[in-house]
Length: 249
Image 1 (cartoon, helix red, strand yellow):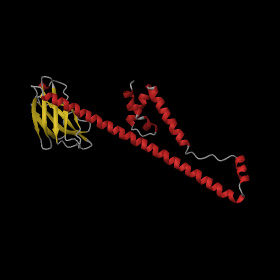
Image 2 (spheres, one colour):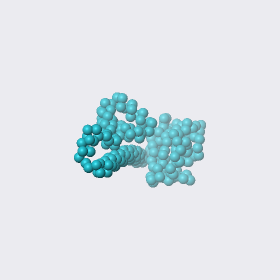
Image 3 (tube, one colour):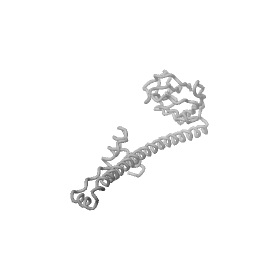
Image 4 (cartoon, rainbow, N blue to C red):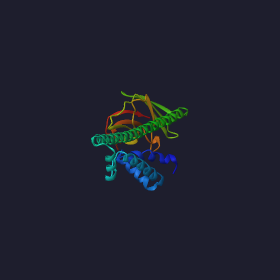
């Protein structure tokens, strides 16, 4: 297995060791650990490091009776109690500082993992947008590509359709983000007004426009139009929400 195949699991190992992963990520990582010795070694090393750090926060062991007697003989009776008291305070303060340092280290580690995962999601979205944009530019250079305008109350744009090569791309501007429990779903419309799902679209508030390839299980020549509705998160088998737009070929 290459480093890039290991990386998604390696970055989750620190969070796994402190119980900061969700159930789905835990299941994926544990399944990977069963078959990957190098990742098991990485987890063991991380746990060993954490345990060594935690040892500094453990309560100090009391001195032996012999050591205590030797110290008492060297100190005047009047100073025994204050010095022992200061010793206990110093040990308690050092234990507290070590505990706080460990806690901060774990919190910063979990925060760093969260930031890396967020950046990876954003990078994947940008790569997807770039690929769809390149597909749209390529289609515009084809002489057989048809362009259908979209003029709806909340969105404008175009549908690029090439029936010869069975390609289609939606270019949308002004599409507002759907609520967190909803998503946009694209439908292919046949001659009997039947609907076939052609993919889900999640609009982003920081994107001035988006381009999305339409996934068709059949030739586009078997359909007469494309539509979009608002559906529950995860999509629906058939349209259930309000229609955003419809385009007839």
